[in-house]
Length: 639
Image (cartoon, rainbow, N blue to C red; front, side, top):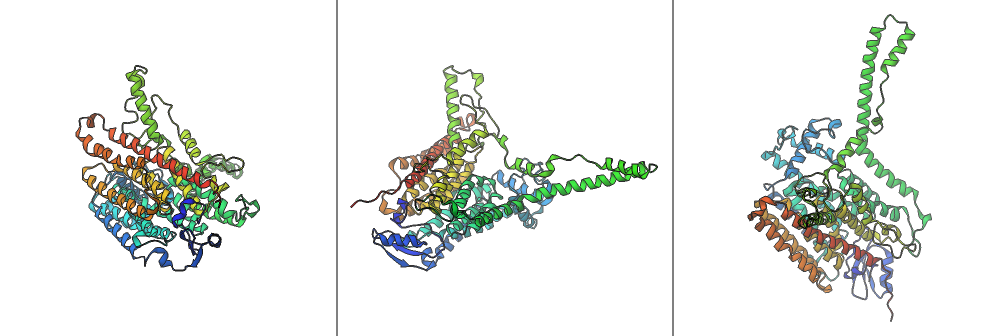
């Protein structure tokens, strides 16, 4: 065994760019490692160490397969240009218009369209930069009043803006692949973990339909997260912190995984050593490293938000000076006959203006009110497949049963309150209604825990990164658990947020059989839950074909990588995934042909949310169980 993690016996380890050695142990396992301690451990177990400096070998062959995968998926994206696009297309067109035609001080106040700017400042500047290129395609798209404007030139520009910015995602994927070691027993490039990882990331079904059909920029943003993870594995912590800070100022949904970053940086970077039992050595704290991290994070947020403070001060001072000048002129004319001393006092009195308490923070409250709109309700119009979908469904069933059994009056049952397809606040009929604070508490409890005094029975959580750090691999697992915890219990979660967990889990999927099985379950279920995003008939064959291709690729190549470990999925997991087929046939083909479609149009969405919530919840619990198993001390072998 090469690691504390029992699933690493396949010999695939996530490593960095530091000097490596090819470690081969007596039990036949092998892997690339970059610390001498691992080599000593392998030698002590009867293995041998062979130096390796070939970067091309680590990537598998000459790396031409990566270029092929990247070009292939880019061509596929071009073929999807003429497909359906959602209201998010108009959202981003409106943001182009706002940032191009209005001064910065009005960006977060503009409300001509219902699609107001509600992303952090860096994304607003990103749209501002795109708008200057958009001007050469069709200047009409840059007018705020041109609602739902979608000329051919506009479609081409916005589609290609996603494709071009995905180059950053491709680069980040390449960096992640360089952090994955070869397997000594691999037979061809198709058996190479880096190749499989590149396929899982570049050809991710969710990114393809969400970005290049539905229309968003998740690939570009995910590139920051993946590159940040890669830099962390390469022990380039300052770069990792910088990239993640930039990401937070592009899209604030990544705040959910910030605890994993914060605790890992503090424990594994600011503290430079641990005791022999793994506990923290307090005297090893490095103020220089802590200050470096604090400065880089603070600088990024200052660059992002400081302009909105400065603009308010500048505007207020300008208005004050203008009013003061006007008052002075008026006072001089009015009191020209008054002695100089009295005239000066009068002018001073006229120039005194009331001070607004908001001046201290400028436009920051307005920006934050756009970023965190808590009046949108617990769930989106289409319930994300999480705990609250099950909660809403249970409330709906209980209310119907209560009305049928005459336990509830018909007036107390709010018909259609949760299933009307509207984004709004609503009250539950039977179960207690959920508040934003309740979801915040549940989310916090799902990623935090209270360890025992000896920390030996600490539950899997971000606190494990503090009490029992397990290196970058432990950080990655914690990040995924944070993403899933926020998805399961967050307020007004979108179904697309499942990609925050699927993408980083791809890295673990090529390192252990258990993680591979959880990835197959989570990715297949999570990707199917995105089907309702594409509801037009012409996109039905496209989404079925793309998902089938990705799923077959994932199952085939991961099963080949871990063929010595037996089936990746148990019979219950396989049965559950097979159930997606009849569910899809009923929701996509059969139900629209029934008369119930007009009276109860929300039924397919409800069934999809509830069924997928069960699978995602199972995968979330499975990840916790896997983490808990890794925390158990390894049993010593007895001869």
